[in-house]
Length: 214
Image 1: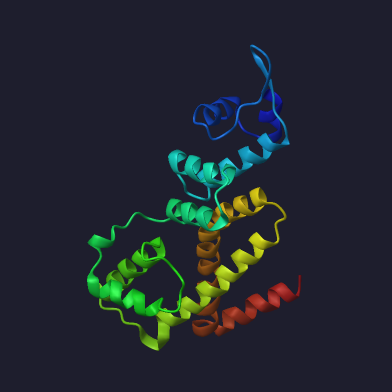
Image 2: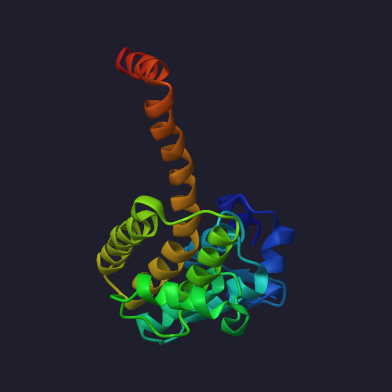
């Protein structure tokens, strides 16, 4: 365990915690006080830390999605587990019916179940946006749909590039939990980029010159 701790830069106490919480499978017992850990444990610890850290999952939810990776569930079911784990819990009964109708119109071409967390979340967000007086000007919502489809294609291309079912399932979980964080981070950077070009063109040109001179 001490070697596993050093390799993963994870305190021994944290490794033991992962074991107690059934996030990390036990090692191969070699004596009452000794166990062997392999590359699969190194990989799993890195996955756990990614899910609990940038992925923003709590321990119980991380255990659930890791269980889906280790199961024999078909990939669409793994997607469902990962999506629900990474999504805020929104009860459809608490969402305005008109907002749900708007969401259904917006997602009309999507092959999704009625209980997809994205459907109810879309309705809740539309309700919140329009509740503060904003409107869907210049096809704002539609352009988000188009961007979401591009990202989803990238996600599935990454999954299909993996060789085994377990590799695909892990990519589904990582791509869903960490993909949300990555897209939000890239959106922040892109918002500054576009706003600088539109409202501070001189500054944008200065940034370009500085980068080209490096």
